[in-house]
View 1 (cartoon, helix red, strand yellow):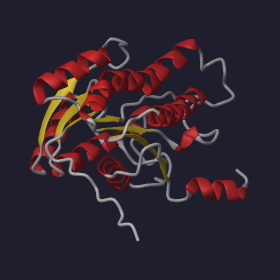
View 2: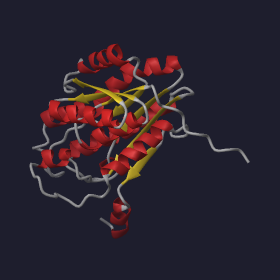
View 3: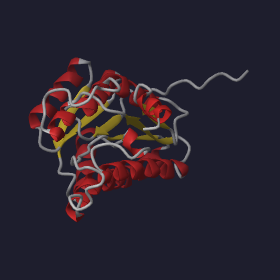
Length: 255
């Protein structure tokens, strides 16, 4: 019987984690740092949160720096990768976690106007594409690399904060699978698709600090799955749904 492939060693490699100032991005960054990865903590506006992530990575025994970039700017992605490369070395692990949303009922097509669609697609889809474009060639040349996209269960059903958000995450899943299809040996592209999580991102985008909905999955559980995909050898093209079975239960109930 053939032996199962063993996880690869990620220690010493360089990772760029977007939206790592809190929540899932922070949890992934800390887990990567604990595994010996040199982590670039990207943030958009939360310098304080990014500093806390850097401190947490260092407390876990890792190396980290914080770098700001406005991912609504189409030119930001290549500049961000250049900064990380100059500071830490070639980016070999890209975690596209940064996202934004608006809370708009699906049927309210007027409120989901062109500005909303453009804003959400730019951060949730076009920024990950641009960052992959900026990092993928070096991964191919090196013969090793990982792209890990953070999607959502909204990608698979008409649910979530808004129609533009759901479409952006569905497109991100398609991008994951399409890029995985052309990834050479040693390079893997995968995604996690979590359900509702109790994070500062959720509170910020709802304007509420209490529990908006019951969390379907723990943030650290999603981070652990993400890092396992990064360190594994059989995950290319994989999209892991993590929602505690909530989506399945809804399907069983017909809603």
